[in-house]
Length: 412
Ligand SMILES: Cc1ncc(COP(=O)(O)O)c(C=O)c1O
Image (cartoon, rainbow, N blue to C red):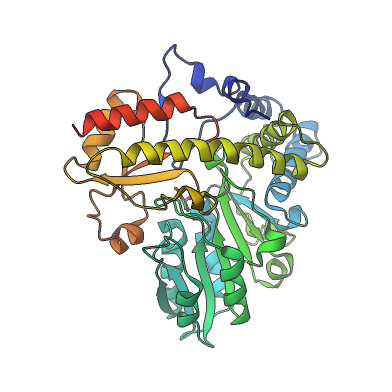
């Protein structure tokens, strides 16, 4: 079945604000939002502007929204139930917060592993924890030929004192996807907890925590067509075992014991609507059954579309003299990357290229993208970083072509 691109694009109001809309290719930094999500946020603000736990209707509505958002994320990641889903302002804040509770299991001299592939959101919280608890930090590199973390490199870092592996599922700079299932199995066999940053995966691939074998998986809904919220799935037994780092007034129930302060009710309404938008995409591409089944259908449909666009982008970049792509370029390895393509040019600076593209109505990012360790590992100047072009399922071939033409002109 052909991907229903026109139907999809008509749902995103940002794409029809003007006769000649910009090409939104900065999706790894934040995606557009469909009208149904915007409506859900507005309706919640009009009808459920209340705290949870009251005797009156608006409060009941707020509670219902809270439950629906947690159920929606449970379906999205393949969790057992809403009890395993923690929602908060963003992935970084949640990770910083959870790291305090997880750290209560560790002792001075214990070891944790962080990677040279991760975004700061999954590095700094663990470095701070290590500083506070006097833990030893070990750095796991990614392989500069395969662009992924290799199991052998992980094995070499593990010891009887390893307590945690924090790694990303997909890189926000190179776009490569790690084999988390294999890496988690190795770390778990050595007795370590596994914390996975799936922020850049979820806009493109459907995670399945039941299969992955990790202990935590974090993502952010503003990266997958929703409002500014973050969410972490945690294995229920572990969430129960941890001593939460929480205020006295917070409930001890799951998942509330890890959700600090008043929930962002209107954004939770938008989050539930985001997952429903994705399920709708599953329906219109011919899938039925449970919401999870529809989500699988949706991701299958846009994976094919995104892969075509990515291959076009990479092939076009390869034709521009002086361009170096920092990531997997072999079309036979498309399954090992998300559609985020970063490059540098041997003469033009990354910021000059991004500025020229912005002037042509093409939105991309230039810089290190908070993947400090990645640019350092690749020997790229930190201030320069890369030009990052990130595709989402609502992008078109015409937008990719426009972007390529503008890049060629900017380096001429
Ligand atoms: C891979 C990755 N992890 C974590 C984050 C941080 O997410 P948040 O903004 O929700 O804290 C980002 C943001 O770009 C990211 O790309």
